[in-house]
Length: 116
Ligand SMILES: [Zn+2]
Image (cartoon, rainbow, N blue to C red):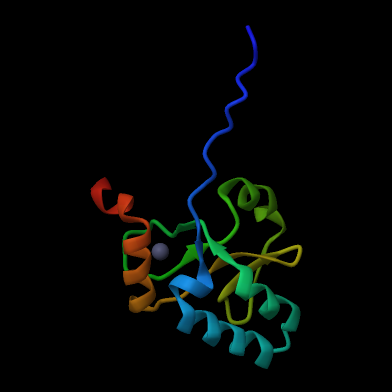
């Protein structure tokens, strides 16, 4: 039997800059102010692949695909006041407690609402 050539569908993701432009600008500003210029340049192309599933409004989201995040996770460290979880120059996770961010994430990832 031939191996199927069908690839799994690409994971759903959203551009940070498109869905949370104000946050993207604020994060960029913060990173630059604190000397993380290279990371700040990556925000424009950053995509959101998922969100924290703690169930509370927390506004925390994941940036690379789950696969990449898993691969890089053990190399990661929190920087810039525990806002960014970074590994090998990649932003893996952004932690905010912003209710407005949470509200946007709920719309982007509605599946989580029906899990209770
Ligand atoms: Zn959370």
